[in-house]
Length: 344
Image (cartoon, rainbow, N blue to C red; front, side):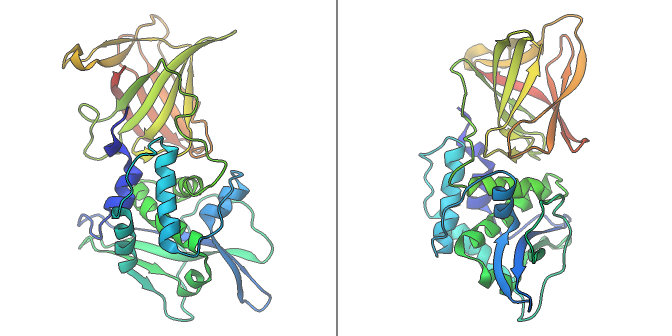
């Protein structure tokens, strides 16, 4: 089983601090769907993440509890549930992390609103008299590394506790994804939409057969300094009538991006040998090496599943070499890594 330390969302929500590396500046924000009356008064505010969850993915959400911390911890617990780690102790660390985050929030003055960052990417259509408004901006100073979060006080006050919790999670998750060079918040919103859902999100281990391998890409022995090339996934195969052998990759983490709802890539017509890892067979470490002669090719397949519909997986299938994977986002290459080893 993959180590619990590889649960990057756990890292984000339980170990976030208000410092960053100097020399790396970034900003990103949270967007809300705001519905106003004909006089401009706020009638309803919902983070875009949850709005999209219902409108785009068909997800359902529990009623807000009225307590921000309770709803936030429910989201943390559900994340571990979706990743198949129901016995992970949440403890007080996540709650303390929430308070650290709230401690750096700066609310706008009455009547003041935040500028739009326009980093939301594609969004679904909105109801009548509803529009997108910037509800939060998370900034990292390039010189000092100091982090700050500005929040629209009017919109925050109009949100229920579930949406407030989702906004906090969005800001933390989007911070991680900007470090992975994501340029829009689309991937973050999809993740938050799924991890707060009470129904509709598919646990990432669903459908895993008993006969499978656990594999990694990136770094030495599956560890990476940057995390941008680090993937964890299961590999299993089957024979498909009329098509022959098919290998399925079922993801736990994809090039640094945590997966919280089942995501797979199906690789048709390939086969490989699992050879002993140089460290020796005692730990049953293996490298998947292409065995098929004369079938060298490079191809792409979609990443299936509602969380990361924006990604494609590239496969370099060359005889005598380990399988190499690439991730494309909307047709643009964002990362390439070799499968470094597998465990039975």
